[in-house]
Length: 132
Image (cartoon, rainbow, N blue to C red; front, side):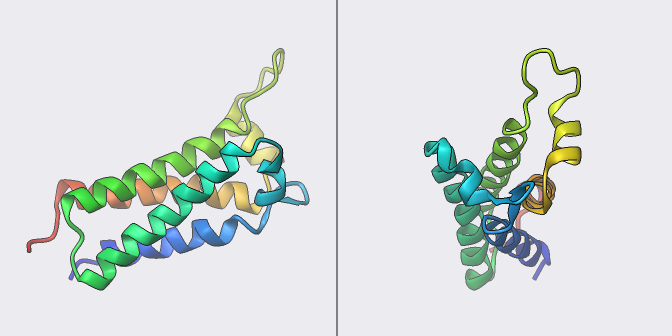
C-alpha cells in the first residue's frame, strides 16, 4: 500500500474543514462566498469531491490512474478558485498570490496550499498508479 491514498484523504479532509474557518479577515469561507452563490457551491463540490474520491480509494485499497486524475482535478479546482478570489482590482500592482498571503486568513491558505499539495500527490498517483 502506497501512502498516497492517506495523503490525498488527509488533504481532502483539510479542505472540507477549511470551509468553516476564517477566509477573509473574520468571515468564514461559507459567508465570504455567499455573495457569489455558484462559486461557493463549486468550491464545496471540489472539496467534497477530493475527500470522497480519496476516501473511496482508501476503502478500496487502491488508487487507480483515473481515480487519481479525478482527485487531481478536484484539488486543482479548489486551489484555482481560491486564488481567483484574490485577483487584484484594476490599478492594484500586487498580484493575487501576494494578496492571498497578506489579506487571506487561515482557510484561504489551507485551500490554496492544500489544493496544490493534493494536486501534486494525486499526480504522483496518476504517473505511477498502484497495481491491481
